[in-house]
Structures are given as C-alpha cells and as structure tokens.
Image 1: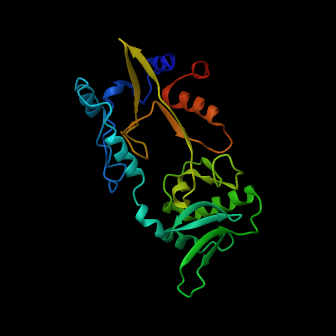
Image 2: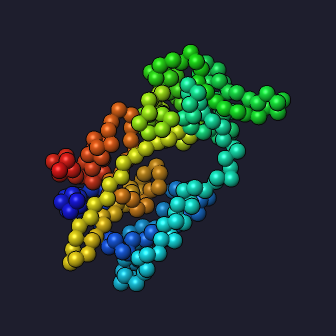
Image 3: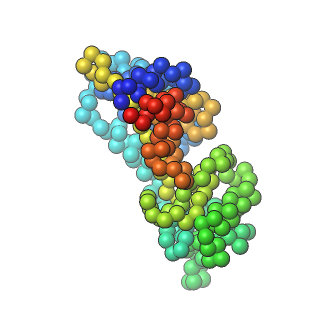
Length: 255
C-alpha cells in the first residue's frame, strides 16, 4: 500500500490527495441530517489540518464520534411506515416511499400496486408486472419509466446497478444508478485506503471530493471509492476506480 500511496502522491489528480496522521483523523465530525449534501460541505482541508495539528492530544480510544456517524446513517428508523416493499418474483428487492409510489401509478404496464383489503386503501407493496419475465425486459421497462419521470430523478448517470435480494444473488434487472435511492434497492461499492509509514508513524491518504460533484461536494473521502455497477467484479472495479480517481495505474494497483 505504501507504493500505491506514493504513486497517488505524485499524480496531479483533481482529488488533491494529502497526508493526515491516523491518530488525528477527524472521526468525530458530524453533520445535521437535515442539511442537504451541498450545504453540508463545511469540513475541508483547513479543518482537517487544524485537527491534525493538535499534537496527538486526543484520546485514540474514543470512538464516540464514529458511533455518532453510524447513528446518523441509521436516522429515520421511526419513518419506516412511510415505505412499502418493492417485490420482484416475490422477493423483496427494495423499499419505496409512499409519496414516490404515486408517481408510478400511471405506468400500469410496468408496476402492480397492491393496497390492503380492509377498505382503508393502505398501500401494501409494489411489484413488477408478471409479463416482464426476463431481466432485459424489466431493465428496459423501468428505464423507460425513469426517462418519463424526467427531473423527478435528477443526476442521471447512465450507469446501471444490479437489483438483487442480497449480494451475490441472481440479478432480477438493472437500474439507473441515480434512481437507486428512489426504489430503495441495495447498492454496493468499493472503498480503498492508502497509507505510508514515516518516522515510525502511519499516515493515511485522504481524498477531497471535487467542489462540483453532485453529491457531497468538497468533502473528505477515501483515497479511492466508487459504486459497484452491473457486470463488473469488485477487484476489477477497484482497479478501474484507482485509475479514474487517483491516477494509480493498473501496473501498480494489480500488485
């Protein structure tokens, strides 16, 4: 990993990699869950370097900040009743917000929306029409839906995510990456950290996201990271992302 990190340091990458000591990493930073990603980018290199310059006075065993970040990721558990199951072949592949379901009602040839039979019109689940039998048919049908929804789903990437019941299971269809949160599917990614040793200390390479990124612009990030699209292995994906995000050539990343 020292070789990889050194290669990244020599690259004139837009990510602008810099060194931070491991013991001084700002794990305790947190943002309000109500703050949009664009407005939450309030912790940058100046803040990171300020934290790193505290001389190591922080307690390395204090993981309270880390657990606060975990709690932030798990926020909204009290709102689970606002979502309904998204089923394919009777398997749960996602959860859709009831408000978004209303936008799907016009696509009768693609979705079946089941309501409760107790007369309360309570939504029970959303599924795909049984006439859509193959992954290709489902992919094309939902792709057309996403196109018709237009600006309702911003930031179209033209990158497909596999839709499964869990990792490694059969792929029911592929879904536009930008639409993944709207259908509540499980999405996977690859993440890589690089470190070097200097004067007996380990230094971790931290990336800074571009200020023009659609999500979390200007915030600190892994050395290399990326979503796992359809039809590519984790290993091949991390090699690809190494070259795209950090300028690490395949000749180095495959060692």
